[in-house]
Length: 246
Ligand SMILES: Nc1ncnc2c1ncn2[C@@H]1O[C@H](COP(=O)(O)OP(=O)(O)OP(=O)(O)O)[C@@H](O)[C@H]1O
Image 1 (tube, rainbow, N blue to C red):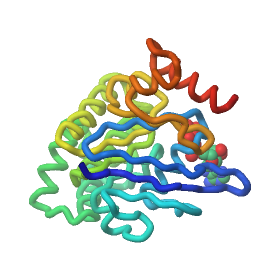
Image 2 (cartoon, helix red, strand yellow):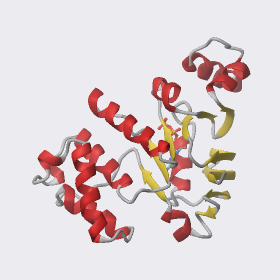
Image 3 (cartoon, protein in one colour):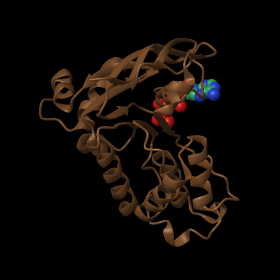
Image 4 (tube, protein in one colour):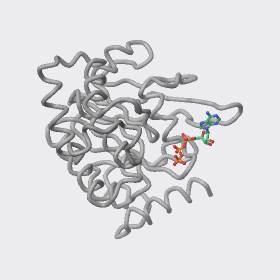
C-alpha cells in the first residue's frame, strides 16, 4: 500500500528552540490517523511544513511519495490542509468561495457546482447561501472551510484541530464526513486535544512531545507501551508524555 504521508527527520527551529526535532513517521494510505501532543508539542508546526507553508530547516515531508519542498505541485495536487484558523474571504458568499477553491484545483465547472452544493447541504450551510461569509459565526466559517478542504476530493486531508468551536451536531457531522472519506480509501490526518475523537476514530495514533515522536501505533500498541493495559487513551497519553518529560 502507498504511503500517504512520510516525514523524514523533519526539523524546525525557532531561535535556539527545536519546535520539531527530527520527526520521522510513515502513514499508509487509507488510514485515519490522529496526532496528539500537549500544547506547544510541535503539531501545528509539523502540519504547516507538511502543507508547504513553512520550510523545514532539515528533513522533508512527502505526500504520496512527492516531496513538498522539491515537487510542491505534485505533492499539493493530492493534498488538502485545513489550518486551525482558516482564512476565508469575507466578501464572498459560500458558493463563490467554493467556486474559487475549485478554480485553484482546476476542478471543471460542471463538477464543481454540484459538488459545492452537495457539501453546503451536507454541512447545513445551504440556507445561508445568500449571506456574505463575513456575517458567519465562527462555527459556520469552520464548516465552510471544511467544505473547501473536501471540495476537490483530496486523497490526503490534513486537519489542525478541526472540531474546535463546533457544536455537538456539527462535530458529529464532521466526524462522520471524515470517517466516510477514509472508508472511500482516502487518508485523514488530524490533530486533536479531544481524546474521545482519537480513541473512537483513529486507526493509528502518533504522540509527539517537545517536537519528537514519543510513541506511535494502534491504541492497543500504545497501551502495551505505556503499561496501562486497560487504560483510556487519556491515561496512556499522559503516562507516555510524562515518561518523556521525566
Ligand atoms: N512563529 C513562531 N515563532 C517562534 N516560536 C514559535 C512559532 N510558532 C511556534 N513556535 C513555538 O514552537 C513550539 C511548537 O508550537 P506549535 O504551535 O507547533 O505547537 P502545537 O503542538 O501545535 O501546540 P497547541 O496544541 O498549543 O496548538 C512552541 O513552543 C511554540 O511556542
